[in-house]
Length: 315
Image (tube, rainbow, N blue to C red; front, side, top):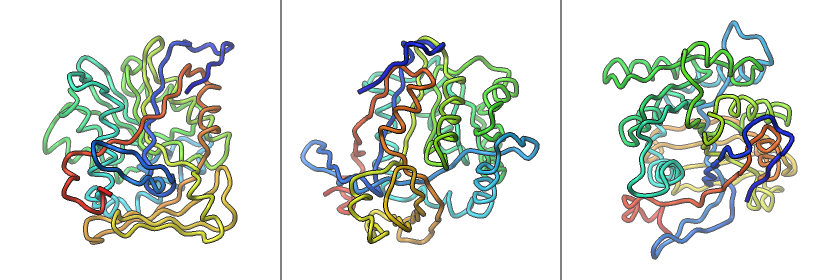
């Protein structure tokens, strides 16, 4: 699946992988060996994007996200124990990054947008052997935790506070890090913080500007509008107590709808809620192809072997 835009001034052979993980909509099931996971929607755990105090370009959504994560930073980090994140999200993301068992990110420069407290930044360095890793996020509180962990166990990871909705975001990121364009740009739940199509396009513009021309990749986890959200439109609520998530919304389901997502930690000892805007696959593909990405690939989910003894994860 993919689309090209011949008139783009970006390299047409740039490859874009999008890793679609579903927890709060979906309605698909994927078999892995002898068992399957029901994809009942998207886990919209944003570490999201946006806003630097001295950056006033288009920063309203960024400012809101920054404030949100200032309030929930501690509880958000606690939700890393969520079974979906532990056994599905991370293993599928690894599959998208390194498709074969013997592959790695050795020699590659990686930029992690919406890095939050640096969870994936550290994994990119320690488990996937990236040559260098840099992280960008809107939340000063999240970045403070990322930097604290870097001080405790140094890996050479650099972090930057920046609003990704700003038209000047890519330039500021490149200038601040003093580094070349990335071989790989990753972003966990970046696009679901676009409140309208102009913002969706701007986030794609920023990602495209930061990816190396002629072979660089952009790999992202997204939450999106799905059949199960649409079918439950009148109820305005979806929930899985076993997998630890809930989604609520008002009104009829539609492209770009706002959903409040709640994610629970292990044994529901912690919880955090945040908004996501759910865009259709078509809208996401159009936005990506419009900025020059030549191919969009949707990766099926994979389950970690550690989930075999978790009946709430393995169906």
